[in-house]
Amino acid sequence: MNPLAHQLNETIRHENEQVYAMLSRLGQEIYFPKEGILSQSAEASSKAKKFNATIGIATEGGAPMHLPVIQDALSAFEPKDIYPYAPPAGKPELRKLWQEKMLKENPSLQDKSISNPIVTNALTHGLSIVADLFADAGDPVIMPDKNWENYELTFSIRRGAEMVYYPLYNADWKFNSEGLRQALFEQQPKGKAIVVLNFPNNPTGYTPGHEECQEIVSVLTEAAEAGMKIVAVTDDAYFGLFFEDSVHESLFGSLASIHPNILAVKVDGATKEEYVWGFRVGFITYSSPSKPLLAALEQKTLGIIRATISSGPHPSQTFIIHALRSPLFEQQKQEKFDIMKGRANKVKAILDSGKYGDVWNYYPFNSGYFMCLQLKDIHAETLRTHLLEQYEIGTIALGETDLRVAFSCIAEEDLEELFDTIYKGVLDLKA
Image 1 (cartoon, rainbow, N blue to C red):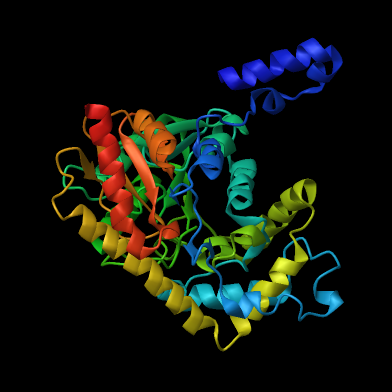
Image 2: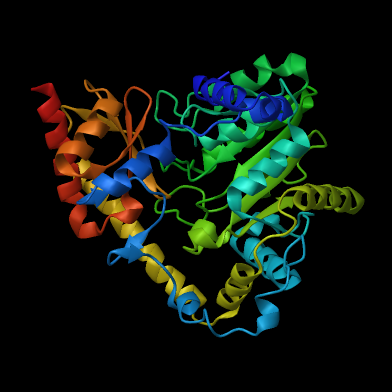
């Protein structure tokens, strides 16, 4: 048990033995990480006065980035579209519009049989539904070693699943499909695995190319042919933010209905795609050639939703409908994409300048909100704390060597100063 969870349990036991006895095993094991991204971001929010590159949102002009088509419309709706409960599966029009958007942006889905997207309370809720439906104690959940920390809480702490990691990159700094293969076949005796594919990747900002994605599909198919039952989950939180020659589609399209032993599940949302993080609107979509099976999965999913949140927020679903229907939507979204791409390209140009090679490398990145430095001689947490205390700059420390920088929330003209200051912080510590 995590020491933080143990400490909480002992406090509850001391204060009220009966309440402690009421806790489920999940209740006993859950905890709020003190050393994770959320706590580091919270610390940075009070101390990072100059630059705060910790939070996974995009900013512009000192405020959260947003689409005018959404901001201008907040008071323009009928009460019926805001105040009643939304259906547990989400507003039908929103589900239809999101499916149309999904098919347009993923041409490989055109001839595939998929469910109507079900509205979730953003991405984490969608992943928790996957965990509730498919993860039992001891079931392997396979993902790269560079990953979002919330997966462990969602799959391992909540459901007791076993987290299995493999290196994200191979020796050529491409996606490590052989590492995925080894991890999968090591779990073959268990007969089942949940495979999480998160592209663009958080924290590295990496998305595989076409050949790499073909290798991923081949590996999963090989395991399926060998008899493994695989829940292939594409976490597409940052979908659409592809800045270079990676794939520009979700792997969901390539995995949908590819083998009877593979169930493809797509988890995505307006949260980051449409710059509406606080709206908490996500979606979960299944693929199967069997319509009755899709209908059954939808009913089971609605059972989970009913038992947890009952239904998602109505106003934010209405706002997303308004945006998707607006003739200004594509233009405004392209404008924000161009800003994000400009920041990513600027970061790469700065890092390739040769100024910092003596103290760090950087992991390949081509998409999303983030990139990661690989520090050579300095502990990441030591540098994070030093930057925060001495320079009022917030970053995220991940493990011994990795420092995540969210370029999404730093203006392009400030990026060079940001990395120059991080470099100065390294030199301070080396001295």
